Length: 154
Image (cartoon, rainbow, N blue to C red; front, side):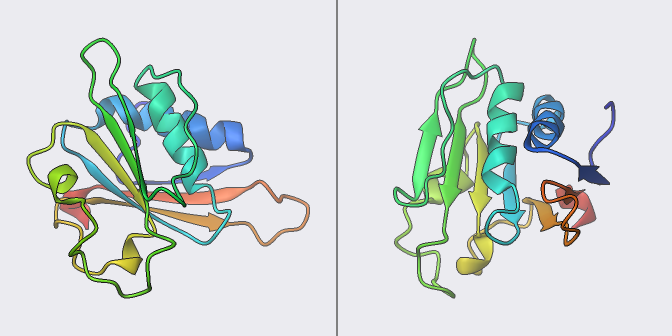
């Protein structure tokens, strides 16, 4: 995959979803914010695992559903990866009090936020939108449609 920005993809397995994210990771600029949108089990955390792999990180990446935010140190002077999951905050919660301002403004790492719609107004306009949709074909339960939209195309 050479140019995956502003594109639509279909992955057939978690490994393919991670590979897609791993290919995207080195094309992202420091300070990039990714809004990961999709239902439960759509592949958002799997995608973040691939981002970490693409950045050369080897520590396990797990869902921060109960901790809200997890940080992963960069490798060889690479960017830090911040993974946030807003699923457990109240729907329609405002961005105040989430403690994410330091990651959204003047941060030189990458930030991936699951369930960003739970905090309207949280994300800056420069955020990427990555939308995940599960296949409704019972014969392909691991298939995902993933749309990548960079900030300029949002």
